[in-house]
Length: 610
Image (cartoon, rainbow, N blue to C red; front, side):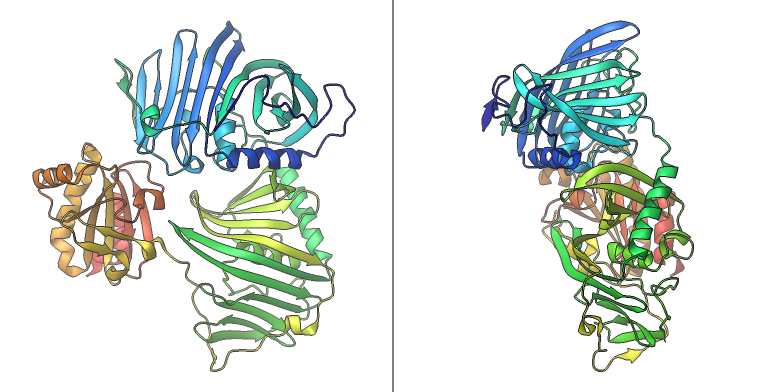
């Protein structure tokens, strides 16, 4: 642990004082160093002064932040006669305010990256939002200062604060809205944040003390509802404001900029004569990681090999000579079509369904399919662009392509070279599959053997085959019931399984479990399995008493016995219900008691057809 005071936080300055002519580093370098500094923190305590200026005058206050990975947090702001707090002890996230007194509670997020209530915590603190977003790797502040509204990040100079030398960084959203940061040049931590609108500073926070590696325990950040406070609904509207200041950022229209950038990226790939690219494909489910290499080799006019034959994907696409093959290597099955005379303008990905987001996106661009016939474009409902943000030493724009209310793909594309660096298939806020580009060589030598592929012995030709199956969360779930029975979801293959996460004082949980008990009584002998899982760590004795009083005969288990379902499915609200089909595939996650949604999922699973 080290305590950092005002005078020594940046004692080892690396740039000249304000006004010096030292060359400034690129924004990507500064953001990389900031992100690295915050992501390396196990815990931190920060104190700052807080000043708001609006049409009613000036309000001053003090802010305190305590954060420890993965999900311990306390944020307390006292300003004038008002106060607001956000506290997470690893089990419960509580948000509260005064004037008027009100509070709400949620299940704790598994990590800062899954903290979804920043926009509603009632604390107008850009310092807090930036600290948590950077600790989470930039991903948790979608509605705030590191949001899709960010148009440009710049390093504009150097400055001093209390004798400490810092970089001056601006986050520009539009002509009227700028966030200005002072970032120390030794520890790369934020020392000052100011929100500027129409040239006027409306909110400023100045760090007065920082303790890196500070002791932060669950009891230090426990949430206590305020005296006389009113319990608000599950989705409260707690204004993120004091004295009329709303710190939310209004989205800006970047559609023209997005179209121009996609055109630039498409042109970069169309002009390539050869390309050799290697990636790492990953899928994480709970604590289990699936990973495999993927390679793409292209030589114009019409030779292409995509090799993802390791498990679990077990797939190959080969275009060579007069044949275009899509192969499922594990099943020893393949489809065959006539190869196009040229990759450009063709659609060699048709029917491939490789589930390799970066590789398939690059292949589509090599074919000249930035829009129109591309599989990435034909089902597209909307596209947005955010950034730039640093990724592996380069500034990247992040292009988000939505295909439905829940399904999307996010692609990191280099701002300077227009090349794909990373892509992820996203369901809601969960990354189903991620592909990181490890190396890409453009217009280099490609020997003939690098594009040669031989079908496995015994391979059979088929007319079509289904998508390769992604590893499912159900493959890692095992729990222990209150009676000591071992309960493993992989052993329930062939059954329809309902897992209901609850806590005993939740009225919605009690209502849902009563309905699930009725379903279990009616359909247990017809392939339905119901498991109730307490997600909040209540004692086994207390649960046994509650189960008996509620008249439940369905199996009941505790979380983390050993699988952590709360973490696995990012549960923040109770009840949350997971429905798993007969093949082990998760069909639906229902948040809150919603009988219609549960019945709809069970109907899709085929329960009511028996």
